[in-house]
Length: 292
Image (cartoon, rainbow, N blue to C red; front, side, top):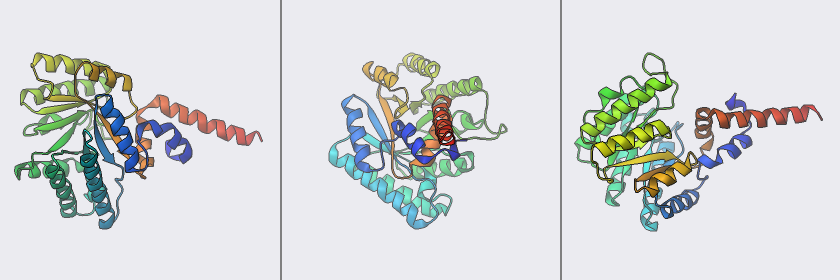
């Protein structure tokens, strides 16, 4: 039902997940997170590009983000979605846009996380990541989604990984559907990454997985600059606070931009409780109009 929900309702209920439409909004949120002892990853919303100019516009926005982080002395990096940089238009175009952002970040001593999208992009995303690393670009990292059956086999050679469960709707042939099975594979992937010496960003709000990750990094004797926890803006902020207070690196994902609607729908679809509020609000409005 969510795509039929009025946009103002979606905007109001999802505002906790998005910094706002402008870079100034993102900077304000990042500064607040830094003051609370947390790091940030800034994401420019905009995946559905249909022209090379639109993809170049997304890349330009990332250059602006990197310059602002540098100028304001913020403790933040950036996360890019390759479809936003033109992956579905032409792979060479996407690579050129991505390389420009990675090189800009390197000049500023910053880092770029290449986000993972649905399974139709997995091979191309990993190939672009591996290609950049082979060329000596050390300031770039990948993402692995634990619900994909292939993920354990994708790990060798990945040096810096954000490990998450995954949110896209995929066929049972390629993705685990059972909640506990996804958890089990998440732990398997985490164990494999720690064993091969990768820097791991544990991206989950699942308390069971957070506790298991804490056990594993403690057992491995990892210094606290060799791993981090990542959470979405507006989701379990009290747990992020407690992890930071215990001395763990905690990074919060801070999306901003005018393309907020599609991102909001994904967040709401992940959270049945919030989606329930959307439904109640929508039906309340409809019943109110019907009663007039």
